[in-house]
Image (cartoon, rainbow, N blue to C red):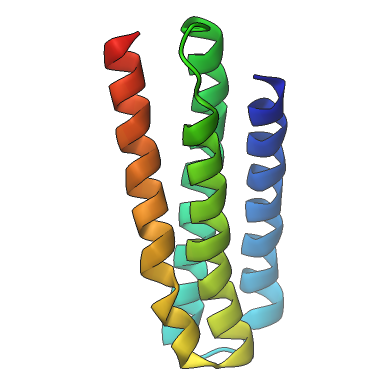
Amino acid sequence: MKVWWVAGALMAGLAVAAGAFGAHALKARLSPDLLQVFETGVRYQMYHALGLLAVAVASDRWPQSNFNLVGWLMVAGIVLFSGSLYALCLTGIRMLGAITPLGGLCFLAGWGVMAWKIARG
């Protein structure tokens, strides 16, 4: 359970840092469209950082259920979804956008598995 508290807190802190970076350092360097893409990555990273904290709470509430898969799916989603959007914006390599849906699938799977485990627990 502790790992998900730590992961959630770290991912939330990194989302705040990325948001500040985007708002201050990238505002003059990226087009408005790319800045919006970057902000989408930040927003979804923060949502799922909070999701990791929910994994920690669920792990405490239903200790007989193993929520590790949920946590790892959310971490993978952050890396693939938000990471690909950050990389696309910073490098301009549009093909990186093809990775983004894989992160979205990880997010969906994570929330689905979480719902299933809570319903079962």
